[in-house]
Length: 159
Image (cartoon, rainbow, N blue to C red; front, top):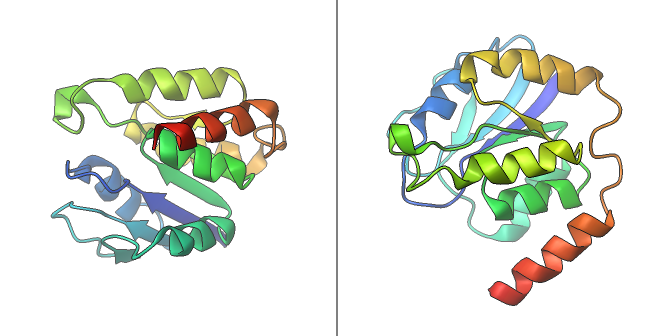
């Protein structure tokens, strides 16, 4: 059984679109933990939490999973990629009022071109992306690439 962790980040905006599509995936195929954040939707088929109490718990959860499905936030991308985990990004979109703009698409496209993650622009294609990620042996094999190291250092300077 594939172990999946779903995260929507810690921001105040809803991302029910991602939570609902993940909750409707076949529970016989996947073991899943959904970090639902501020979403009102309560998953019915998988375990969930609202938020992690601290970053250490988040990091442990990422480390102990096969695939992470998440929004396209820079912090989430860097945290997951630095652990060498497979990441499927479903960006938050302005048209659904999930973000103030569509910057997450641009960031995810950049990392996808580097073969660091799998971009899913249509949530109906999420299960196909999961199946591809399971079989793919090329994406994000080098967790400590120069790109990841550079971005981690850059982001830490911004904080």
